[in-house]
Image (cartoon, rainbow, N blue to C red):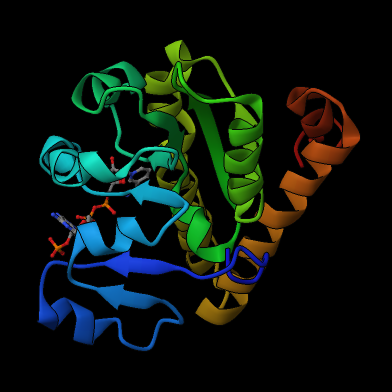
Length: 208
Ligand SMILES: NC(=O)c1ccc[n+]([C@@H]2O[C@H](COP(=O)([O-])OP(=O)(O)OC[C@H]3O[C@@H](n4cnc5c(N)ncnc54)[C@H](OP(=O)(O)O)[C@@H]3O)[C@@H](O)[C@H]2O)c1
């Protein structure tokens, strides 16, 4: 977000120990959620789903005219709107690839969000990968699908790597080739506009 020019970031943590642990991040870290919200235009709610209500009640009086973006799995915008009346909330489901700037994120607006505010939320997540706006009825499926998706792909990567080791490749060569095989296949699928079975058919030969 900083790279994309989204101004100043303020993060909150609960303990000094945690603050110390992340002191090298280019973000202002405070221990007070209310202080952070007071000085913000956009508030990201990133606690575990069971902690959402407690944190929302703590900051509820300060959210007027701010955009709240919640990444909490399985917590609907209507649940959040019941806790904080008239809140402008966007529900988002990114995935762990956000760390590398390649998240596949889905977002859905709550009932008080304007088109412009939704566009701002989309722009934020577009700066950290790919972002699509979906109807909220799909968000639980999205959580299981792309929210958890990197875990399935990583299992496949491990299988490819182990297969490389099994047929005698040194670890470094196997891991580099496995990762670039994955990257290349994904670009091919994205660019070719063909069904994966059709692409597979181009390389599979009898006895090959
Ligand atoms: N993990 C994923 O791939 C993923 C993907 C999409 C969405 N999500 C959603 O993201 C949310 C966070 O998941 P996570 O895996 O990142 O969990 P996590 O590692 O436990 O992070 C939650 C953070 O919230 C902090 N926190 C808890 N209560 C707080 C409070 N009152 N004030 C300030 N900070 C507080 C925790 O601090 P302490 O360390 O001090 O407890 C912790 O650093 C969840 O709602 C999850 O559904 C996760």
